[in-house]
Amino acid sequence: MNYFIHTYGCQMNVHDSEKIAGILEDLGYVSFTDVKDADIVVFNTCCIRETSEKKIYGHIGQLKKLKKVKKDMIIVVCGCMSQQDGVPAKIRESFPYVDVILGTSNLAELKDAILQAKRKRKYTNTNFCIYQEEDFNQLRTSYPNAWVNINYGCNNFCTYCIVPYVRGRERSRQMDDIVKEVEQLVENGYKEITLLGQNVNSYGKDLGGGENFANLLHRLGKIPGKFRLRFMTSHPKDLSEDVIDAVAQYPNICNNIHLPVQSGSTEILRRMNRHYTREKYLECIEMIKSKLPDVGITTDIMIGFPGETEKDFLDTLDLVQKAQYSSAFCFVYSRRKGTPADLMPDQIPEDVKKDRITRLIATQNKVTREISKQMTGNVYEVLVEGTNPKFEGVVCGRTESGRLVNFKGDASLIGQFVNVKIEKSASATLWGVITTEEK
Ligand code: 5AD
Ligand code: SF4
Image (cartoon, rainbow, N blue to C red):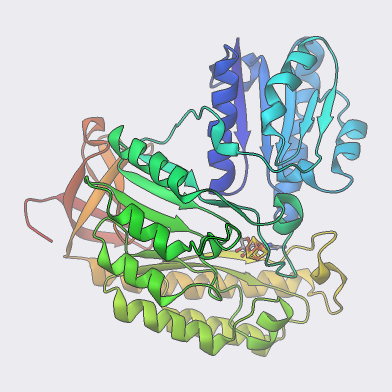
């Protein structure tokens, strides 16, 4: 009996899929690469933008024919999309062959739901419940990297964002549990651990014992052994100097900060409910750069928020040039039902959005190319993550600052730290050679 998991969206979902895989393997299923032969197909969904939703509905639709032939196949839809109001009913109506629908906090029921489905009983539960997700046996699939949740949910209610509605309020894991999990991972040979939370900087606020994210970094930074620690996502309104000081203090914590800006216009930021101005954000960038030389700062930027004028957009382009991000995820604003921005006047026409996203990407590409050029000739320590699927005999890995580097090597290097001299760059991707030269 085998399973196939479709994972959509962010790292949080990628990690949730490792928990889903753990549950399925406990039930005796094994992973399989071809969906056509799977006994269980899981859709671990995302609803952050309309494009993700459309794609997922398309993929669920494609299973209709297959399920007619393979009547015992069990189809599960879970994750953020199924947590949205009205979506379970819509799935039941449009895709009656789906067996199980679970919300973002109902993974603990997956085992029972599958046992029910085997008896041809449909199972739906998207009622929100707070539970210890980390109790699951996780099937980690991304050695030498590993994900560790530190907090769940979000309290920020940015006006465009669906996440607080589908992931619920902020809940932090106990610090001792996180430290234990990271220690165990290091002991088991994992070399890069990424702490995950919708807003890692507010870690601990709900625990009530004075715990905070900087304290957590101090505990994790002291764990012995050669490994790297990263974290995402930081919210500019909550990122404190203490956190950056901790990153600077411990060699294991990477000089790499993901700091979504969303817009370079103070007025748009106000309407997005982001709680910072353009100036405050740029001060934050300066603070980071002054304390962390060689830092790689990445961001998320959105264009086409309701009421965004050409002037607002030019402020965003200007900020992109000033901030000098090593890379940026650029998004077109997408209306999400139930969010305040969906009801705002002056929604931006598609052609204007298209024009702005093209200009934004071109501006960031130029910045990335420039930074890549500056890195050429330098030596960086790279953790080898895998073989490059496009080029035979080439492996890839990341610098501490988070840049992807390709170089000659084989699978035996995976999980090792090597020094690589950068020889050339193709915009975002760097190419280099292993060297005995020191950094
Ligand atoms: N439309 C477009 N992008 C969005 N994001 C969040 N909500 C939306 C939306 N409605 C982007 C933000 C966030 C990233 C994870 O997704 O930039 O940081
Ligand atoms: Fe969404 Fe804002 Fe929360 Fe990020 S901080 S998940 S953008 S509401």
